[in-house]
Length: 354
Ligand SMILES: *Cc1c(COP(=O)(O)O)cnc(C)c1O
Image 1 (cartoon, rainbow, N blue to C red):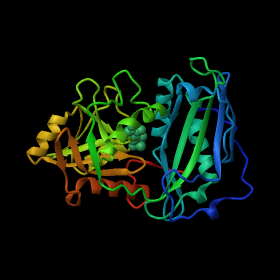
Image 2 (tube, rainbow, N blue to C red):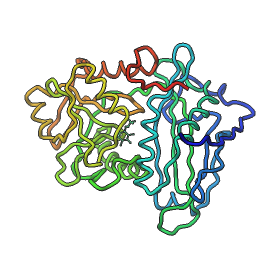
Image 3 (cartoon, protein in one colour):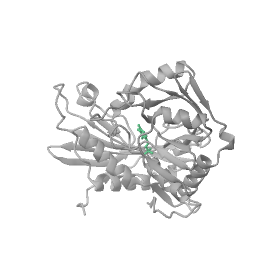
Image 4 (cartoon, rainbow, N blue to C red):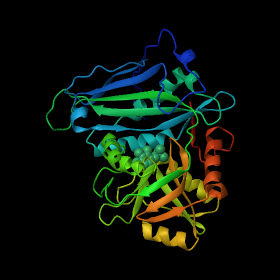
C-alpha cells in the first residue's frame, strides 16, 4: 500500500459544461473543467493539484521539446444506466505507463497519484461523462521532462498531468490498409513497446505517403525483412484464418501491448476461437487469402475499439473483404461495448467503479 498522497482540489467558478454540444463531440477536441497536475522534483512528487483546465507556462528550453522524453496513455470512462461511473481496466494502463517511463529513463508514477488522482478528477468532472450509447470520457494521462536546460541528458524534473475529453461515437469506416515495406516503426531493442510521444511523430510521414495513395493507415512490418506484420497506427491487428485468430506476439518489444488487444484475446477465446500470438508473415496472410481461409482482418485500440479492415494491399496484391458478411469482429465489438456500457456481465472485472 502506498502512503496516501495529498491531492489539493481547486474548483472552477463556473462550469463550461452547458456550452458543450453533446451531439458534436469529435475525438480529443473538448476538455472538461478540471485537470490534474503534479511535479517531480528532487526525487519526489509534489504540488499535486486538481485545478481548472488551463494552459501550462513552460520555458522554451524545456527538455521534452528538445529531446522527446514524453509518454502518454489513453483510457476510457463510461456511465451505466443508473449513472454510475466506471473506468475500463485503468490498472493495466497504469502498469504500461510505468513500463514506458522506465524505457524513456523517466521516474515511475506512484499508483496513488495515477489511479487515485484519476479517480478524484473524474469524480469531480463526473457530469462530463456522456451517457448516450457509444459515448465515453477519454482520459489522457501524460508525463514530460520539464528541466529548463538544453543539455542532452535525462531530465531531473518532470510534469505529470491528466486531462479528460468527452467523446462521441468514434465512427470508423472500414479501413483500407497499405502494407509498409520501406519505412519502419519499431526495431528490436527500440522503443516500440512504449507509448512514447516520438513514436507517433516518427510514423506520420509514412502514413501521409500511404494516404496520398488512397489508404487510411499502414500495416507496419519488421525492420529487417519487411515480412513479419506488426500493428496498424495506434491499433493492434488480428487475422481470422480458418478457425483460428492470430495476432503478432509481443516478444521482440516492437509492438505496443494493447489493453484492447488483451481484452479481444479473452473474448475471442470465450467465443470458442483458438487464439495464437506468434510471428506472422505477409506471405502466410496472402496464402490464406488465396485459399479462401482469410476471413476477417481488424484493428483493436481504445479510441475506436475494433476497426474493420476492408482492404489490405501488399505491393500489387490487393486483398478485399466484404465486412457486411463478417461474424467475429462485429460480435467482439458488440460484447466489448456492452461490457463497457454495463449491458453484458463483466465476468473479467474489467470495469473499475469510481
Ligand atoms: C495505444 C496503442 C495501441 C492500442 O492500445 P490500447 O491499450 O488497446 O488502446 C496499439 N498500438 C499502438 C502503437 C498504440 O499507441
